[in-house]
Length: 179
Image (cartoon, rainbow, N blue to C red):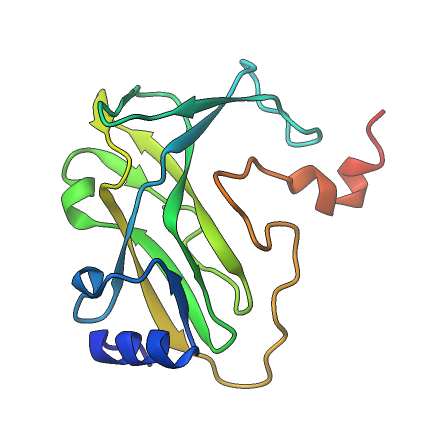
């Protein structure tokens, strides 16, 4: 079952769902709009290595925005901190943003019950596209979980700002085998 807009509002009010800051105007019929935070990360090496941490560069956007370039991966973040110990969150790009040729979070939309923090967004533009901090970039839907719940305690818990991949940390075959 998916939470409706009024139930999202009720769950945010009674603490079953945390959205900070919460803006009633961002509640949709069955989702909540999230906005783009002011920081983007880009990887600085020509080849991203899944076996190692990769260097990144911060891009701090101001009110003039920033132009995303095709062929480049940008890691952004939600302005809002979102989380729940009761519901399964799924984040997708807004259709109006997709119609501008921007892919948002297409490979990893599902969140974990128990995660609380800003969401890292994977952004990829088809054509050069100017984005702005605070623009409505995505929407989160919340689903009722059935069964026992193990709360998320992973490496991205309480994230602030965009987080580069830490894939290499979780895979002992790669993480410990590489010198």
